[in-house]
Length: 303
Image (cartoon, rainbow, N blue to C red; front, side):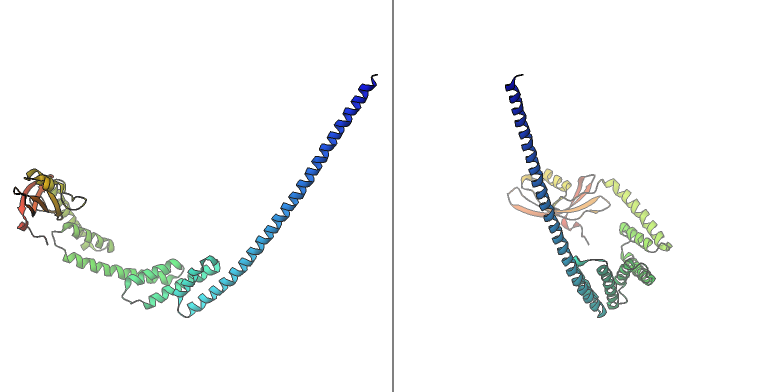
C-alpha cells in the first residue's frame, strides 16, 4: 500500500470537510442575520401600524366632537327658523358626513322648503308646486305633500291653459303653424277639451295644404353664415353687374313668401360705370333657387 497516497487522500478529505463546515457556518450566520433583520422590519411595521391606528382614533374622536357641535348648531338654527343657514353650515362641514348628519340635513331641507312655502304668495302656483314637488321627493311617505303638489299642479295647468288660449286668440288666422302648435299644447294640458282638438285638426289641415302649395316654389332660400346675403341673390347680382368685382353684400332680411314665390330683401353696394360706389336695397322674388323678379325697396313693408 502506498502510504503517500493515503496521506494525500486524508488531507484532501480534511480540506473538503473544512470547506463544508465553513459553508455551513456562513449559511447559519446569514440565516441569523436575515432573521434579525426580519424581526426588526416586523417590529417597525407593528409600530407604524400602531401609530396609524392611534392617529385614526384621534382623528375619529376629533371629527365626532366637531360633528356633534355642527349637529347641535344646526338644531338651534332649525328651531329658530333659520333652516337655510343650517344647510349652509352642513355644506361647510361635509367632510364630517355620516348617517346622523345626513338625517339632520334632510330635516333642515324639509324645514327650509316649508319656510319658503310660508313666504310665497298663495297665487304663485309655479313656486309652490316646485317646493311641494321637492318635499314629496324628500319625504315620499308624507301624503300631505303629494296632495298639495297635485292641487297646485292642477292650478298651474289651468293658469297656463288660460294664458295659452289668450295667446291663441291673438294670433292671426293665417298663421297656421303657430295656431296649430298652440292648440297642440292646449290639447296636452286639457285632453278632455274637444274644442282644442277640433281647432288643432283644422289648423293642421290648413298648414299641410299651405306647405304643399309652397312646394311649387322650390327649396326655401337660406341666409349665408354671416347673415348678409342669400346665395341666389348674390349670383343674380354678379351675373347682372357692370363691375361684379366691386360687389359687396351688406345685409339681408328674413325670408318671406308671396303668391309669386319666396321674398327676400338685400342691401348691396358696388361701383357704377363712373367708378362711384353706391348702396341699394332691393326685394327679390325667388322660385326654384332662381331670382324671378326684382323690385324697389319701397315695394313691401314688413310688420
